[in-house]
Image (cartoon, rainbow, N blue to C red; front, side):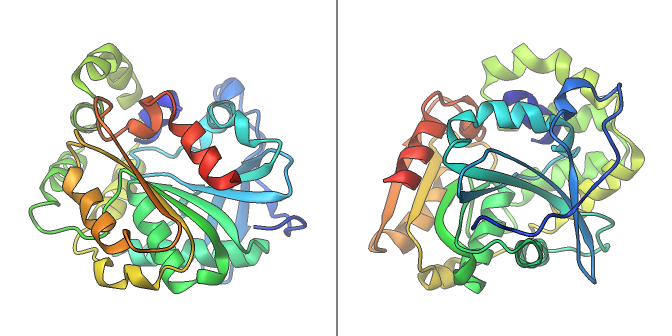
Length: 297
C-alpha cells in the first residue's frame, strides 16, 4: 500500500450506497474498484469496498494530503489476503467538512456511516489518525466493533506532540504543496525510503489543489487536544496494537501509553516494529499477516 500512502500519507447484507461517477481515463487502473458514497441527513462520505467474505473489515486511513480513493485498486491488491474471508471497506473523511472538525467528529461521522450501511460488529483497522478515530468508535459504539487493530497511533496528543503536525499545517496554509509532501514523507518514512520516493512526492505534489490543502488543514487541526487515555478501559473488544520504535511523528511513547492502559485488557496483543518508521503499516513485510492472524484466530 506504499503508493496509496504517498497519496495519503460487520455483517453481510449491508445496504448499498449509490455509486459516484465512473472513473476517468486520467485516473486509470487505480480506480477500477468503484467509489461509492454513503449519504446521511448531515453529510456525504466516499468509500470503496472489495472482497467477498461474510465478515467485515473496515480500514480507517491516516491523515492525508489527498484522498486515498484514487488508489482503491492498490489498496485492494495490498490487502488481497483478506478478500476471501472479508468484505473490506475503506472510508474517506466526510465531504465538505466544517472549519472546526475534531477527531471525535470524524469518528462520530464514520460511526454514522457504519449505521447507514448496516455495518455492525466489524473488525476495524485504524492507522495513525484513523487509529484515533477507531478508538473513539470502540469507546462510544462498542456494538459496532468486533476486534480492533491500532497502527502507529496515539490516545493522547499534547501541544508538544502536535508540533510536527502543526508544521505541516503551516505549509498547507502557505500553499506549499511540495514542501508539505516532502515534510510529510520525511517524517513518515525511514530516510532510505524517503530518498527513494522523493521525486515521486514532488511529482504528486504538483497535482494538489487549493481545496485539498484547505481540507488537509481542517483534518490536521482536528488532532490537536485529542485525548482518550482515560477512556480506553471502556473498550470491550480484543485489541492488537502495532507500534514503531522509530516513529518520528507520534513517537514510540504513544504506543507505550496505550499499552499501559490496555495491558491487562482481555485479548490485548502488542508488537513494536523498528526500522520502518511511522509507516510500518506500509513497509513491514509481515504487517498484514499479523493483522490477519489476529483477526482470524
